[in-house]
Length: 540
Image 1 (tube, rainbow, N blue to C red):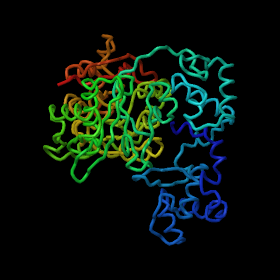
Image 2: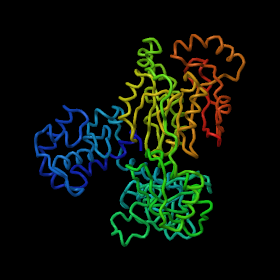
Image 3: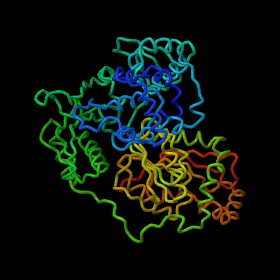
Image 4: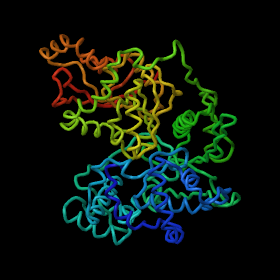
């Protein structure tokens, strides 16, 4: 869910006025709640420990079991659950609480949504995300109760937004978003975290794939069937295996403790695809190699493939070369400070006239670990879908980066800001599933070098999503682009209005998988031609 959806959960926040757990502790500490809010107001984004130290209340004590929380932590969590506080950012697992009104935009806070309307919207979104689902499936998606979902389902069916359907082999009736095209084939690979929405509701997983899955973290070691922390493996729409993984950071190794194939899965096909995903995960974790133990019926095939392809050896890491990169403002005039300040107002009309929606449509295909190059002031931050697990924003210009850091707190995803140009990305090979470029390739100093770097940091099967203003296809407009190119470049801090981005992508080893032409309305004519789409690096 995005920040814009916060009002849809006001009803739940009211239910959690005393928190989800430890309610008696919260009820007994009404004065502490007031003190915490005052402390956060004074301190800014703070952890529970920092708040506690500021209040000079309970003495810091050694934590034992997971739920051995101080009263300050219990009350802070209750304030967070009820919407009084929210999460400004995280460091590891530690929330940094802040006043909600300082984090969320005013228009989001001002929006009031009727409870029934909110539940209908959540129900519709759940049904849309699932494709087809029973009442229980839809209810579990947002952890709703039967009394909340059933009236919403009935209202959505009456309105023609959902269709009741029967699925062969399913005992319960199901629902389908009206207008959906079925069937739809899915292609691609993914290692699924045990808490991934695709597999979290175990009854649905068993109905769809016959895949029995349980988290065995809390099962005694001797009684575990597959392992401590097991990741199901998705290949072209089927769950074909699972692996028990453990990272040895000291040795720089991703250990596959066990590897198991599902009945009917072909090891000769599963092992190569799984090896690629394991290599991607190891690279993302900063681990140099993958080691496969003997446990499991897929282990031998997987280990043989990894050894044969040299995937168990350390991959090339990013090493800065050449001259140290200077902040953008040292290579440009002080005008870059002015440009950063006027950037959002200058684009405002174009954003409201279709560009924001075009960004949203393009970013809907983003998944997994995302790198956005030339992130600017962060106009995309709130538009990333739930399929994204983390976002890294690379921006070389210091004034832009400063504004970007102020905006990232509005993201529903973990976000990191890095000051780096597209030509020299400080990340290991295969670090990202998706790279995003919006209005960036026009400005980079070296497009070929930028595209090579993007291809390098993309994991196997990854894609580049782009929205770029491009060279006009109309002769008259092209002549004006050529005439005004230099003054526009000076005004827009290096932007080239006449670059042929499609040709550059193909010339630099990208396969353009989909592309659409658009018009950037309410903006200067020379930058109105737009190209939006997705591209993937061709195999070396």
